[in-house]
Length: 281
Image (cartoon, rainbow, N blue to C red; front, side, top):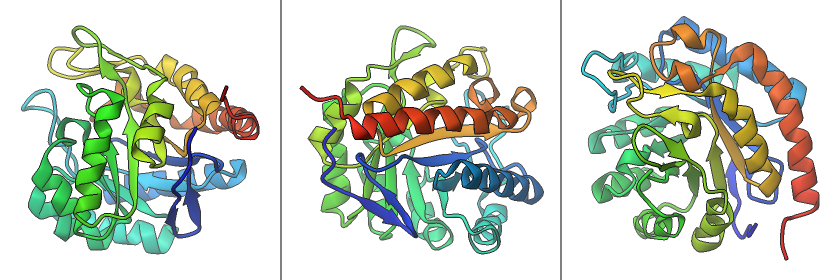
């Protein structure tokens, strides 16, 4: 996989030819106490396994399937928690932004702004995120071909964003189903020249599959994650929860916290082989 660009975050080098970094955390911020527990536990796991960690959580899940879906702690409550995770726990933080005006507000409190897949072509949102000077992780829409992401990256770079991550999270296949074309990983790396992230948990999501909520098949997360690191990616994205079956959102596709360490140990081994022996002809 082509690796012309490295994004540096604190002491983490994120590149397609470097050992993978992990972007992980619960789907949404449920409370300060929960966020601190999750970030501290994930940090300890990743230190044991030797994987650099970026903590992920969302202050507002604005794209819930139904009006009754829980959306998170909210912007005002989340900002001081982001600060605490960065300073006290010592982790960089990534969060989604859905609103143009939120980019400038959130940016001082996090390290990476994430553009949700549904919004990856929203030019004004991309411009606003780029102008904060933060790293931007943009997810490929379920409706886009991998080569279409070059235009998305061009919007960000043309608006002043020097450090862009591009995330694959599956493509729509009929109703309530996503599939992965793993050719997309090297294609996006070649087309955009950016570090590629593979979202192993949203790739097993079944959008709207439970009627008023999305379903998912978490048992396939290890399968897809192993496939992705076997090809070679800069980072893996995985939502993780200590009790997924009772999580307020995305439970069916989140990784149980107690299963994460053994999964990461396996993925590190696959990643090492992939980076030592790139899959090229």
